[in-house]
Image: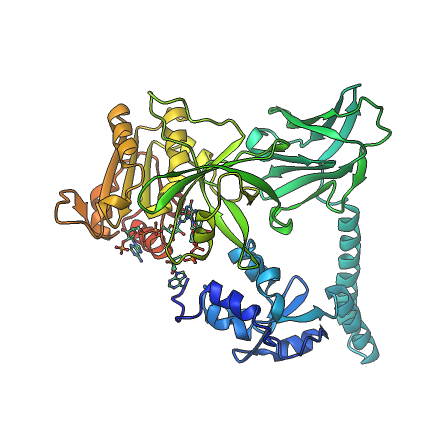
Length: 509
Ligand code: FAD
Ligand code: NAP
């Protein structure tokens, strides 16, 4: 993120888009844009970008882009889809850039190649060059046909059967170590959507069911053989002739980044204070949803703010840390807990703070690239958190202290501005007393004069003081999360101290 000029916040952008001003300069016309035309609009004062086949004039948006003008200019006059997907595929650009829409791209790559071929033939270009182009063209056409028919790269398939009262959909993933975190099911009314995560791909079953089912959905997993069963209860005990009408994405196995984010509406059931500006929100999943957010992953919340859909990421926590005298943290699969700092000028958090108990908010499927196995094979776990960068550490602490027996030391180094900002200080201190493997160090950047603990900002000297291996050759994992510059600097200092890339995990968007 870069500092934006005053009057250039997301809220200001939303206001501008609603002002009726002609932001494309086309007076409401939509164009068919050729690649040649697109490439001409490559300057800051005249900048068009293509995302998923749609072309936007982003010049009016330049000063409002949180990532800065230079980031946007990387895709000026070109297809920015890959760049966009790498950085923020979750941003609802269709809604944010609606008023900047110039039109659609006119030609598809295959058609363009075909055109080029004809050009080569008609202009007597040497034969071997034409041959290469021709081969590429044929491969592209065959591949795209096969992909449409879903015949390539897909070994997962499904089957279904019924009894008088139940419908069972069986998915054979052929993947070992399948588990409940990897299966996301939503069944509302007659719509069934089941997504099975397999590394960076996912398999989807999406059907408009033939008959009504109750909201009680069960998921059974045979972990070792990778078989997943989705069991639905029939509302009427009639015999189904077929399962239902498949949707476009049904029975596909594709890259997760190529699937749109799926959201379901969750009910706000409680909101409790954690500190003067941070609250614990408890959301309840709909009855027909089976969703667990794995350790180290985040979800996206979507809400309409000032008439525009706004999406922001949040990392689910547990209701409390693993302390004996409390119930074990509930993995009831029904509630999602979010610890959220409310910013006095924050666009989204102000809207969240105004939600009433019983209100609904949309929650996405989980995302993130952290793997549990990174902790399960470590002997020393070091967690560096800045402010709400503490949130991924909550599930990590729970996992480390309750499930990983090879861990010898777990240390949290928690950076905050003041004592009042420290999240769950009491619980952290109690956890340190309870479990001798766990140690917590609070470091304040703006302490009051009464603070007798450590003070300062993340720095090489503070890190070399607190980040240490318990043995010379012990296997270490260092996780870091906080404001973006905090995380970036922290990673650099750790590398300077001799820790390798594999030993560091930085939580980012
Ligand atoms: P914004 O409107 O974005 O503003 C936030 C503050 O920054 C305000 O004070 C605003 O005035 C100021 N500001 C905004 N943009 C600029 C700018 N360009 N220049 C100068 N000042 C600016 N947060 C949590 O509380 N809990 C979580 O669990 C959590 N998880 C996250 C997980 C991930 C993967 C990521 C990337 C972020 C996470 N966040 C979390 C942060 C969260 O997504 C939002 O960024 C945060 O809630 C602020 O949103 P907002 O719309 O209210 O604030
Ligand atoms: P904060 O209270 O503003 O800051 C926490 C600590 O970090 C303070 O000591 C602060 O010191 C220090 N800090 C802030 N900016 C710094 C910088 N540029 N260099 C070095 N130290 C810096 O933090 P917050 O408001 O809670 O914000 C937490 C951040 O974590 C948000 O940006 C959020 O997006 C991010 N987050 C990310 C994830 C994820 O998974 N990626 C999850 C949760 C939260 P001073 O301000 O006094 O300098």
